[in-house]
Length: 315
Ligand code: 5GP
Ligand code: MN
Figure (cartoon, rainbow, N blue to C red):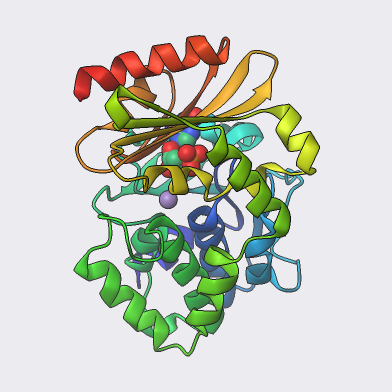
């Protein structure tokens, strides 16, 4: 029996969940795990809870029957958490996580300390979907499972461009391609297409960005006013940090997203040598060496000054 079936074997009521800002890897892993377990254990009661489902990944749950944004009202025997580096990232689901007899965490974040009862954390894996694939039996992966895993891996590797893409990642992707998924179509729809609003917001953010530290650092802010002006939602900000990161000469990109009065969500990306996870952990967040985030209070000026001090120390 493979590891994933083994994990779920003894539990009747299972909850599958992820972090409070579900991305392609998180959604893909939750759906792949659900489909896999539901196929083998149709008699089990398996609920998938995510705070939200980004529109561009909604096709993975084509009948809208898998993911719920309402916290399940049950006493699960097992809670499985995906792509979540800490218990705090689970949001409201943390209560269920703590009360369940068993908990399993499947993840790849370097800042993950192994907060569940059983942990499958592989920081060398490109994505949680890659870790999850390794817990499944190749032959039991069908089209729907392959599609979800592929989206997760493609998301976290920036469509196989980032340095977290390994030979193993490519081999897994190849195996998933063999299941007949129209990967070219997914790549366009999920990773390259932009709505007009998204293009406008991207343009505006780039226009008002600033270079710091002799061009080694780029910084931009998305204010609530901008969001209102364009009628944009948080989902429309995806890809903006990426565009900042690929600016020639830049080592670190900082994107501030105003979440409240004097409160910002900070996204950090680095290109070669700066460890942004270290900085994020210092400020109470986490992530990976080259992609991390946290939330911080204060004015834009305060926030940027605080962060750049830590970047300067590493540059
Ligand atoms: P993003 O900039 O895309 O929001 O996040 C980049 C990476 O950092 C993701 O892998 C995400 O899980 C992690 N991350 C972002 N914000 C936080 C946070 O507040 N706490 C922790 N632990 N990780 C975060
Ligand atoms: Mn991930």
